[in-house]
Image (cartoon, rainbow, N blue to C red):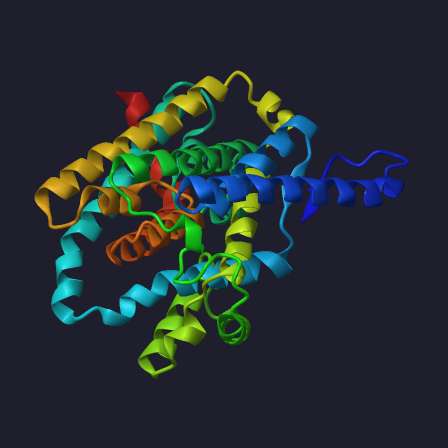
Length: 372
């Protein structure tokens, strides 16, 4: 983990102290994770590391970002555990997922666009940046897209990661209220969380290597959002179809806990006091928008659950706007159906495509609105 703060003269010698400080925060997060595991909190390790590192980032005004060499394997592990349920799907099951998946994607898109439009109307930022800040297409992907499209990167970064943090913080509550079974004591697998299973480590390393190679080979023709998640899902699915035993492609035990911890740091360690102060006037609007998005997802889940065969928790997890890594981990620990994975992946793809075309779509609509 790396702690980042605005550079000042004479701070280079503080690196060992900061490293020791982050190690201490990790130790605290492990203790909190143990407590959450005993208490039966779903995806307890993600939740613990998000809360502890989120508190550290705000109190110390330091952004904590997992290095790429940790984030990539963590995304691969999340992809592997969420792809395993897809192996057993038959044609009729896939067809039964079509309607609820489309409903969840449309509902999420509608909620995101409406809340973004309200942010713009309230004067928080320009229309494109406001809508982009609420699109649930992966916080990191939206920030990258904002830079490419010359949108308000700072506003989008704050809103996206605040949304991600608040959604993940509320997930344990919704999982419990909506009847999730949970699997926190086993790190989401069939063995205790502390079990150092070695076969999924080898399997994850191979899948990461194949994914890395595919990304390098195909990058000159096209790019995929969250590639180490989505392409790893494809590679894992193909490995399962090829007959690779589950023990090699279904992470469990200590390796999965480590992946959850990294995702928790990524979700919680981004927001700092400086970032919050920069948009202090807009913060109530942003928090209200995030609250509306969560309530909108709940309402959409109720409609989906009442009109399809999908239960309420799965409908909510398929619809809730971000972050995809944490939501899929919670879905895995809660024993959710594969419809959650299908809905979240499709939603991410749709949101990135919509975000890419916002500069073409929104300005004419805004001009027409102002002429009314």
